[in-house]
Structures are given as C-alpha cells and as structure tokens.
Length: 591
Ligand SMILES: Nc1nc2c(ncn2[C@@H]2O[C@H](COP(=O)(O)OP(=O)(O)OP(=O)(O)O)[C@@H](O)[C@H]2O)c(=O)[nH]1
Ligand SMILES: [Mg+2]
Image (tube, rainbow, N blue to C red; front, side, top):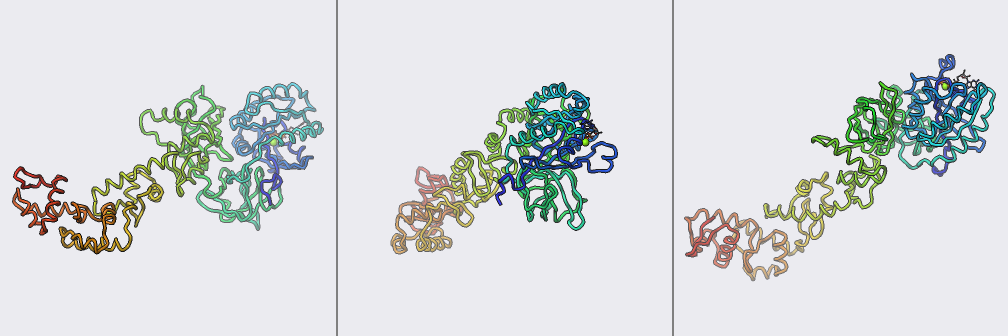
C-alpha cells in the first residue's frame, strides 16, 4: 500500500472553538449526524465537558473528523488537549451573542498555537442576523495567525447554511499542507480505555507519520506493541497522518496511561525537562514565573527564566518528548493570558557564569529559526551523536561531517585530525619505548566524547595498530621486524652492544630498513652505523652516575662495557642531549 497517498487512511481533522453554548456541538451534529457529547452528564446538562469526536464523508469523498471541544472556561484544559495536534479550526460564534469571553480565549489559544487554517461559522442564524457578527469576528480573526478567514452563517435547527459550510470546509481542507507520512510518530494521547477482549486502547490525533499493527513504539521508558489500529470506528491496517486513530496496545495497562502521554517512534525523540524557547514578541507585561505549558495533549507545570529579549528558559516539572520547532502554549494560571513559544533548543547549555543568560538569549536571537539554525546549534555542540541531533529535531546541516555514529561541526574533523601528530609526538617524547599513544590518550587530549572517533581522525602516515596511534610509514616487513626484534632482545640484556655493520647486512637491515625502525621508535641512531634501543640515554646516565665526576671517555666506556666504536658517538650524543657536559680538558660530568 502506498502510505503517502492521502487515501491510506486519508482524512482531515479539524477542531471546534468558541464560547460556551454558542452551538459547537449542535453544528457538529448537523454536519456529521453523529453525537459528539459522549457522556450522559454532558447530554443531560447540554454542556460539553470533555472532548467529543465525530466524523463524516464530505460530498467530494473527503473524510473529515471533528474534535469537538468544550466552551466552558472551566474546561479550557480539555479544549487545549483537543486543539493541540490539529492543523485547522472551526471557530463558532452565535449570531445572537457575538464575540464573547471564551471566543476571545479560544481564539488567543489558536493564535498562540500558530493555527493558520480556520473557518468561521456564525450559528443560530435563525435567531438573529448573522451578518454583523460575521463581519466583526472576521475582522478580529484577521489580526491572528489565522488571517483572512472565510465565514458562513448557519442554523443547526433549520439546517440553513449547513451545505454551504460543508463546501467551505472542502475548500479549506484542500488548502491544508500535506502532512509528512514518513515522519516519526508522536501520538499525543487524549483518551485511554479498555475494551473487553482487546485490552488497552488509546486515541489521539496523528499529526505526522504512520501507525500500523505490529509496530513497536515507546511510551515513557517502556516499549509497547501495536496490536491493532482503528480509525473512524473501522479497523485499518495502518493509519497515516493526518488522522484520528485508536491504537490497541500490548504491554501496558490502562492505569499506567493518561492524557498527555505520547506514543513515540523508538529513538526518534528525546525526553527533556529543560528547553529554551522564544516568545512571539518580547512581552510587555511581566512574564509568569510558573506558567503552565501545553503541547499536544500534555499539560505540565514549568518555571520560567527570562534570558534576553523574547528568549526564555523553561524548566518543566515532568520531561516531555519535545523537538526543536515545536510550538508550545504558555498559560498564566493567574491571568487569562496565553503566550505562544517556539522551541529553539531541547538540550540547552547550563547557565553558570554571570551574564550567561543574557548571552544565551542574544545567541538565540541571532540564530535563524527552523532548519537553518542547525548549523549554529551544531557549531556550539561541536560533536554530537547524529541520532541524538536528529532526535532534537535538527536536520544534519550542510558541511557537517558524519563519522560513524557522530556528527561533527563543519571543519572540525580536519582541525582535530591536524592535531593528532602533535599528540603522538608529545607522547613519544615522554615514552620513547612505546610505539605510540593508546587511542584513549588521544581521545582525552582532543577532548572527544568517544574513543571510537580516534580512528576516523587519524591521518596517514599515522595509523591505529593494536589500539595505539602509530606511524604507519615506520611499519616494517615481517622479516625485517624479526631482525630488529632480535637486536632489541639482545640490547635488553646488553644495552650498549650495538650490532656490527656485517651483522646488520647479514640480517638484511640496510639504510632504509634501519631508518624505518628508527621512525617507528624501535631503535635510536646514536651515530653513523650505531643503533641502540630507545631509552638507552637513561641507562647510560645511571651507569655514569656510579663514576667519580668528572670522568674520562675511557672510564665511561668501561662503565658501559662497550667498545670505542660505540662509546665515542654515544658520548657525543649524550653531550648533544644535555645528559653530559664536556669540560675543556675533554673530560665529562653529568649535568
Ligand atoms: N436556535 C438555535 N439554537 C441552537 C443552534 N445551535 C445550537 N443551539 C442551541 O444552543 C444550545 C447550546 O448548543 P451546544 O451545541 O450544546 O453549544 P456548545 O457550543 O457545544 O456548548 P459547549 O460545548 O458547552 O461549549 C443548545 O440548546 C442548542 O440546541 C442554532 O443554530 N439555532
Ligand atoms: Mg458542546
């Protein structure tokens, strides 16, 4: 099945909005023939308390699901959970009452959420002239994220205007941006219940991605299986956004679920309880210190810390699966005020130094919003796990280097690679007997998050051998290595017994082979044709320390137990390295 085709489970989802009693539920009923008020109490009181769901097939064949929200101010939390994942709104205002308190509140919620697609229905047109209300409300909506909104006068009692409303809905839905069917799933749960025989079922509005039976999803810190999927009351093989879905879950009890939990594609999201966000504009009124944060169907408390300008940091009371680019709604529980905020960073840097908050705010102000901010964010992080970066909501920026599981800021791999030879040289100076530093030493020296990055940063002629970074150009062919090993073994027993020239020739060690052994740190060249083991300077010094100072070359030669062939260049070599000091009478003493 082609999951990208709009017909895979194809539908659109719209949410109602508007003042209590303005006729939202009656209009949904007139439009769909279904009863959105699910509870007996709602029907008895004629009042919507919780979210209601209804659907219909429009005349074009397009299917429409409606999330009906309560208008009463006490249930604004439920209203927020209903509109949180829905791309379009049906704003309902009664002709006999006009713009009212919850009309204003709901419209500011839609505005703060950045809802761009809406339709206005002026209901109860049988009771009063709808025209002035249409004009007034359209003008007010024009100043919001919804902009120029088409309006229709309807009566749910007489049915007048309902076909026109359906036609206007068709036009609105045709203009909605296509959701990304391949995106990871983040299904904000709005209901959880059990069905006898089936078990745990959750429902929600799928805003992106696809859910299919057999999928594994993550819920908090547990993995759950999708047993089956229903959409609009029918079992489906899979449901593709946008869709109302009911998901039958394996591996979780209904008691462990609540509204605001999210079903996630494994690995695609990270839970965070600290986010940096930017408000739509630097606020004029003081900001609430403890706003309530709404996203999807979730509601959590937060502590707000102003950074600079419109940027603020939110510390959430409960971690949420948030991504850069998410839209949050901040509600001031004291005042009737809502603020819209864009998530800019879900793993922000700690603010320790004085002035760090202000600087961070300025940094966010300078950083482009959306995907273009990825480069700046990666530049700050330098190195990050690619999967982690993607789970934050960022695309890999142009020029970034992918090394195994890591993502490096543009240019950083070359910069680090160029530092490796220095690290190796420094190590070799301190430990000349070792072929090179262990990878872990290089990792620490370059401050890398993982030793697995080291091999990727090692450039020729350096290479990784047996867990160490060594000079690959100094690699010896096997029989040469065997000859060098034999010499080194003998030098362990007698550190000053440099092999004679004929012996070197017989072993196949010519100038080139010996030079490679020296480059590789296996031998040191003391003078022309004189090779000893690295570290010989230390042994030589120890033996000289047993002599009365100053001493002659001949005394040194005897202390070392070697010939003049070796002693003469060794003495000069030690002079040159500052181990010994040559006196005017040609005698030496240790420095
Ligand atoms: N005359 C007339 N009455 C209507 C119309 N639409 C709704 N009503 C009545 O208005 C009252 C409220 O309608 P609802 O649909 O429950 O209003 P609501 O907006 O869903 O209210 P809440 O969900 O509580 O916010 C009911 O008694 C309806 O019968 C209409 O077009 N004409
Ligand atoms: Mg209602």
